[in-house]
Amino acid sequence: MSIELIYQDIPKIDILTTDLVSSWIEDELKSHGVTEPATVEVVVVDETTIQALNRDYRHKNYVTDVLSFSTSENISTNDLPMKYQSLGSIVLCWPVVLSQATEHSHSPLREAEILIRHSINHLIGYHHPGDN
Image 1 (cartoon, rainbow, N blue to C red):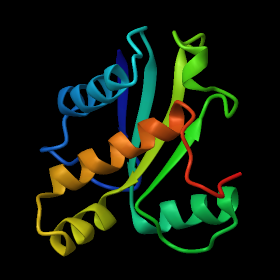
Image 2 (cartoon, one colour):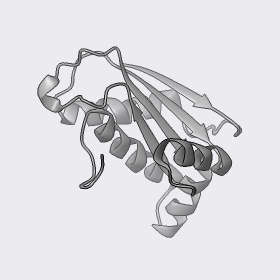
Image 3 (cartoon, rainbow, N blue to C red):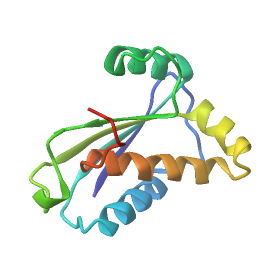
Image 4 (cartoon, rainbow, N blue to C red):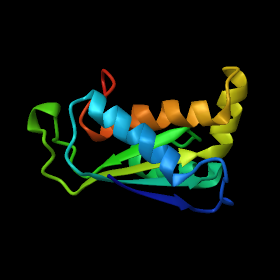
């Protein structure tokens, strides 16, 4: 497993380590039977950046908590083991993580874990009902 943790337009968050994020991603992939090596990029951003991405790629002009950009939108668990070196990118908005953690009465790390695990599901082909 190769994880690249990138901070864009936001200072580094010391509690959000590459090892921790890797453990969440590896665990989530294993829960779906994915054991082949994979690469995932996790980009931590501010509200302005995620709103611009949401507007430009989803045509929804508002701040959101997380976005997933799959390397292949046609991948399904039936295609596993993975044929792709990179599963894609997860873009996480840290200020929204903080806000939602408070709202749900748990830690920012727990909120980040929930969002990253959710995003991994999107990267391997699971989508919300009604998604294109």
